[in-house]
Image (cartoon, rainbow, N blue to C red):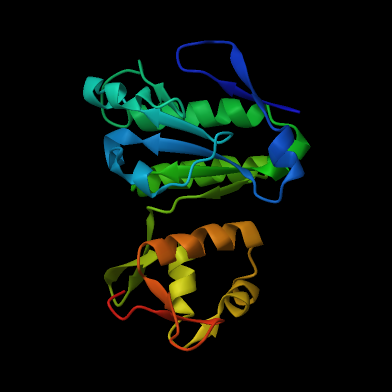
Length: 213
C-alpha cells in the first residue's frame, strides 16, 4: 500500500512503500524539519529508520549541501520572506495528507521539528483534520499562570521523567502513560543514552531519574 509523497521540485508524487510498517507495531514517521527555525543539529537526536521520511525545508545553500544524506529530502525554491517556509510546509503537508488511505493514516506519525508555536498550531490542525498522529518534540507549549508565560515540555521523554521521582519499573511507567510500547521504548532508550535515567543500584527492574535532570 503506497504512501504518496510529493518530492521537492516535482509535481508528480513519489511512491514510498508502507508494507513493512503496516505489518509492524511501530508507525512510519514523516519528519518536517523547519531548518530556517531550528537548523539541522537536532537531526542527531532522531532515530530515523530506512523507511522513514525526512523533509528539510530551507533555501540556505549551506544547509542544502548538508542534506546529502540519502535519508533526507531537501525542499527549497519557495519565495524568500517572513513565514514563507511555514506556508510551504503546511501546503506540502496538506498535499501529502490528501493522498493517504485510511490504513495509511493509522500507520503514519507526522513530526514537526521546529520551535515555531504558530506553525505547530497549523501543523497539528491539519493532522487532526486528517485523523493522523502528530507531534512536535521541540515545541514548548505556552500557558499563562499568574500573568507569566510558563514553558511546558510535553514530549514523551518529559512525561517519563515526571513519573520518576521515585524508583519505578519501565512497565509501570508505560502503563501510566498509556502509550504504545514502540513509542515508549524509543523514548526510554533515548533517556538512557543521554544519561538522564539509570537503573537503580542492586535492582534489575527499577529505574531512577538522574538528579541533574
